[in-house]
Amino acid sequence: MIYPPVRLRHSLKKLPHKLKKLVNGESVASARRHTLRLLRPNRFPLEPKRIIETIDAQGFGQIRQRYGVKGPSLDWPKFLDLERWVDINIRRIREIELDLARPKRILDLGCGAGYFLYIAQLLGHKGLGLDLDQLPMFGDLTRLLGVRRVIWQIKAFEPLPDLGKFDLITAFLICFNRHKQANVWGVPEWEFFLDDLAKHLAPRGRVWLELNQEHDGTFYTSELKEFFQKRGAKIDRHKVVFNSGLLSPVSTSPVAR
Ligand SMILES: C[S@@+](CC[C@H](N)C(=O)[O-])C[C@H]1O[C@@H](n2cnc3c(N)ncnc32)[C@H](O)[C@@H]1O
Image (tube, rainbow, N blue to C red; front, side):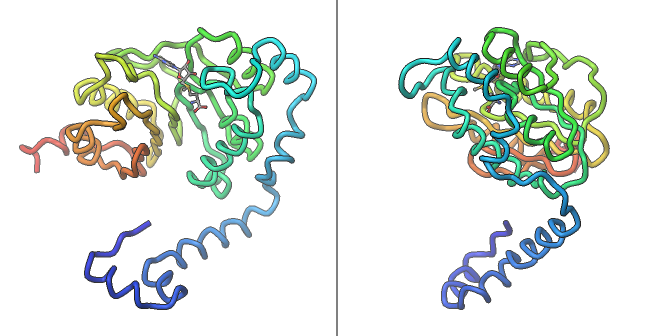
């Protein structure tokens, strides 16, 4: 989405809806999406019911029995609400435009149950998850879904293992940054992490990060926001997206500019 300057925004208010879309560039984007959809006609349909039908219902039922709780949960069993999480992950897939993209190699950090990679795989992408091995429920779910997973603990100032190159690296509801802890990652930790991530990214690769809300209701400090932007990120609330690689630290340093 391109945001027009304030004065233009005022005049836009007076324009009819369709004309507004044109000025905003929305029509161009939607025409692009429409064309790409036509170019990829045999893709698996992104409909919750069709996706859920592909999952072994008996196997899922056993996992639900093993780890489920009565009623809604705010804790880990919430990930057993299949309809809800399939919906959430369809939204993620559409937003990243994986439904329109050519097959990509995707690394999902903190992959949890693996729903995101599962749906991406239905669309022809190749996924690899990375996660802790703390919750047997996530182990059982990723196995059931056939999502490959590397067991690894992401730590501040420690590089990721060599897993090859990826066209897209994602992380949703991020916890590996010491979320809600006193030593939640600041600029130095993120700087090391992004520098390292760049080594795992194919040319023109994308990085899509979604942060979790901290105790004070924020997702990042203003200092961290500025740092992400200097590295080329587009920020939309909790979403921090690097569309074409991760700018090297040299180009973000004030001396180099
Ligand atoms: C809130 S869950 C989100 C799961 C999934 N990304 C989603 O949005 O559905 C956070 C995930 O991050 C993983 N995680 C937390 N700390 C981690 C660390 N230091 N290294 C790797 N994974 C971590 C957890 O095991 C869990 O799977």
